[in-house]
Length: 109
Image (cartoon, rainbow, N blue to C red; front, side, top):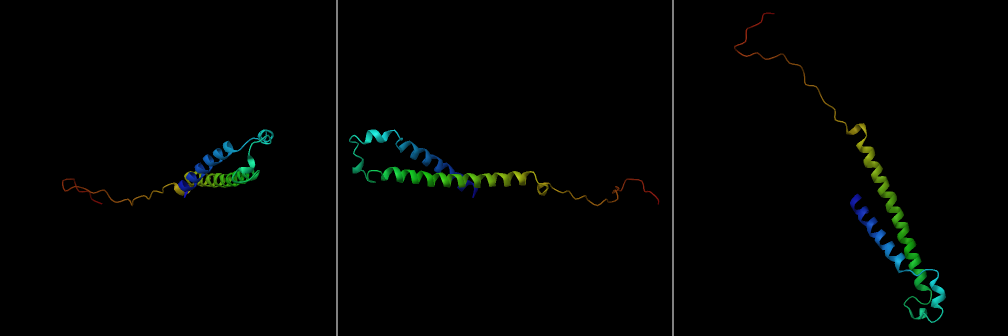
């Protein structure tokens, strides 16, 4: 799940960068009024700007959501690494009497 969200996060980042680079700046409106041919585009005279702006906002919201999700996963992994649950408990073996070989002197009790 973590890897999937990370891949989606990276893809969204690249798409946001592409959308921001494709959009025209605010200063380009004056030049477009002198015969820029904006009415002949696929989205109409101002439709492309609104569409790209909305698409950028949607991708930005998704990027924000994946960022928060990745932060929650990172916190959970860090908390699990430092919790006492991960510490191994050792069990002590029962103490047995020492074994003696057949050559050892016999002790009397």
